[in-house]
Amino acid sequence: MDREIISKIQETARERTPVVLATVIRSSGSAPRSAGARMLIWQDGTINGTIGGGPLEGEIIAKAVELLENKNDKPDRYHFDLSNQDVASAGGVCGGQVEVFLEPLLFREES
Image (cartoon, rainbow, N blue to C red; front, top):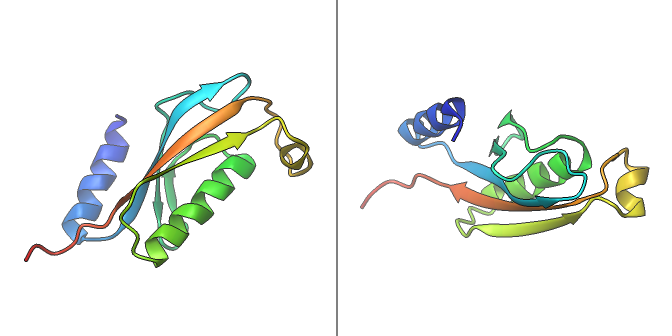
């Protein structure tokens, strides 16, 4: 894993700041990033890293913010078809498939 991502996770753990780790777990065809690409997303929409930009990244940021706002600690997977007309009309230029794993890191106080 990228050292900067690890460092940011450690920092947010010390501060007990919730964050979501987004990881590309599968990609095929023409996709912006390959499996293993990671990005951190905070509740205010701030990010560190990238999973490829464009509509895919925007949608993942929105889903991560929603998880954090709802204090949802359950990980989830999202599949994106980057070849459909909706992606093309939103400015996407790829034509592959991407699956992203979202892992909320809430760093709750120990009891």
